[in-house]
Each structure stands twice: as structure tokens, then as C-alpha cells.
Length: 85
Length: 405
Picture (tube, each protein chain N blue to C red):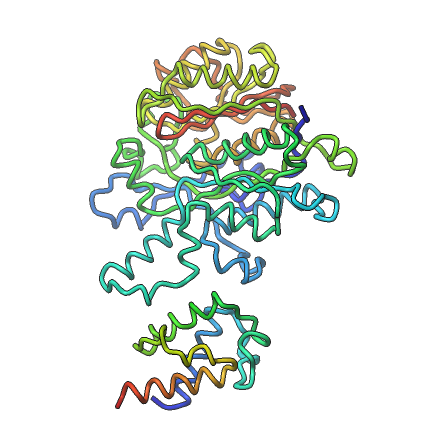
């Protein structure tokens, strides 16, 4: 999966599940401060990631470090590559 | 004891997205029952009818509030918004913790519960269940979403007694304000339609099965050709307020709640019982300080089931005699279950304020067991002010409320 494909899938999750306008979906956007998510939204973000990418990330400590949309892209890329290996 | 008045009303019903749309439909004699392809596709289901409400403009509710709402809570929030607007509700005019929320539904969201188990059973994977689905499948989902949406910090209760849920909520709110525990309460009921809801009634031989090809004729309370109820959905929310508080802030008063009673029949798990219904109405009248002679109209629960309508008619005859006008709005609306009490109460208040009593639609030949009361079969002009609203539920639960417009 390319970076572009990952970005596209994640952005679609933010549009559909969290109703964020596409123009606000920039890598530097803080998902809490800029995009308005809270702790309950992150639970559903994890569920969406698990469904879309077929991975188990609920217990992954790295999820707690996610702050920006770019962090989400990077995390998925890492997870996806680890899964491939 | 304090006096309790109604200063705001809101509704989303199978006949419209507001009180005024619903009243216009009742004025026009329209009805809401439709044949449902979803039901036709279910094996073993003989009733293919439903009275759906339209879900629209839901994105006007902020996502932070809406994310934990299923269809029924959205209907409730929209109805509450309408009630708040009519009441001129401004939280700053009320003391903190003195505005409460009492609401209920028959079940939590059947749509969400279905979705959860559809995901979970084949996978046994909790990792696929969304956080918000849990909030939609709790027994108090309607009341808690309503309280969050309105930012209420007062007394909170969820009434969940099936088809009596909504009227129990209004009655409970009345008792709390009457006792001085709260200054105002948003109260009522909501429901959302799903095939399992009709499935339950069909299984228990209480759903209409003979009118799948003529849906407009299906819901016919008190009629000799009735064969069961048709499930609907929607919400009705009232803003009840302590009378002096309402007068002090110059609010318009649309009605006053005079008395209430709810009881368990204790005789049968599903069948209504005429003595228990009569006892409930008598106690509500006693609590209201009214006599039978004060009552000018009864808005019946009558859902068009074979057993229930006859028991209610017999109870009405025993308590009020044969001269008081009686009708059920389920011929127009279908049975909106936990929402039916508030929706039908609001419709009655609006009708009486315009000097009219709405009839029982589809009542063309009164069943022998439903005789002995004065049935309203066409819109009647009326100067009635005092009425009884009944709601009953599985479990032998009865609720009667006395109201004056």
C-alpha cells in the first residue's frame, strides 16, 4: 500500500466518521486541538483503522503518542510494513 | 403542592417532523401506515406494515452530541429542540440543577443492537465494535442523550416500561415538580422502528396481519375488523414547568397537568385488565382532585389489538359512563410505542386548543366488546378543557394522566 493510498483511506475515515471537511485534513493538523476529536473518538479511530487495514492496534503503545494527522499516516505505514514483514 | 404547567411541546411523528406538521395531517385525516419491504423480507413474519417517521436535518445537532445518538435519540433531541423554542427556554432563567430530564423508550436502539451483534457474533471480535454503539444500546440512551444535548444538570430518570414509557416520564416529571424537587423538566418518550419490534408483536399475536395490501386500513382501534397494531416511531417531548416560575418569566401556558397514576396490574404478563385500568384512572382522578364529571374527553391507549381495546373500553365505561367522547389516534399514527403517550397527548392538547377532538380513524363498525362508550368517528368541535390520556404496556403496566388545557 502506498503512502497516498493510506492518506486517502485515513482522510476518508476523518470525513465520514468525524465529519471533518477535506480542506482541514492537513498532516500538521492536531487531531485533538485542531480537528476536535476526544478520547472516545480515538476509540472509534482505532476501530476504523483495525477494520480498514486488517490490523490489531488497540494495545499498541504508539497509539498514545499520536497527536497529528501526519502521525496517524506514519503509524499506519509502520504497522502495515511490520505486518508485511 | 406546586402546580405544574406545560410551556413547550415538540414532536417528530410518522405524520410529520414537528407538532404543526402532525396537527395538519390530523386535520386532513391523513394516516402514516406503509407496507415495508424490510418486513416482507423477514421469514416467519406475517405483518408487513410500519408507520415510519422521516429522519431529516439531523446534522443540525452538533456531532459531539449526535455521535452517541441512534435514530430514537435524534428524534427526541429534535422534539426537545422544538419544545425548548416554544417554551422560550433560556437556561439562564433557571437555577442550576433545577431543570431535569425524564424520558424513556421501549428498548435501547434496536438498530444499533442489531449492528453490534451482526459484527460480533460471526467474529467474536470486540475490536470491531465502535465506542458510540455502546451509548446507543444502553437502557437510558434517550434520556442521557437528551440531557447531554440540552446541558441539563437537574434530576435525571429513564422510564422504560415499554409503551407506557413516555407517559410515565411525563407523570414522573409532574410529580417531581409538584413536590418542589425541580422547577422544570424536559420529559417524554422516543422510539425507533426495526423489524424485530414488529417481530415481537407478531409473535405474540398482537400485530396486524390481514391488511398488508391495504395499509391505510390496518390500524383500526375499537373496530370490529381490527386485527392488531402497527408499529411506528418518533418522539414527543414536553417542557413542564412550575406554574409560578412560568408566570414569572412570562411564558405561555398550553395546559396544566392535574393528576397522574401508574400501576402494575399484577394479573397477567401481556393481557390488559379492565379492573386494573379502571383503578389506575380512578386514582389519577383522585390525585387530580377531579371527579369523573370533570372529564370531557379521553385520548385512549387503544392500539387495535383484539384484547386490549375491549378491556380499555370496559374500564372507560365503568369509570366515566357512556357519554364522554373517546378516541385513539393510532388509526392515524400507528403505535409509536414509548413515544405514543407524549405524541398523542401533545396532539390532543393542540386539538382541544383549536376546539376540536380528533376521531379514531378507520373506526367504521364498533366491535361488540368496545361498545358502551361514546366513540368519536369524525372530527368534532368541542369546548372540552379537561381530559384523560391513557397508556398501557406489556407487563400489565397502566398509566393515566389528567390534563386541562
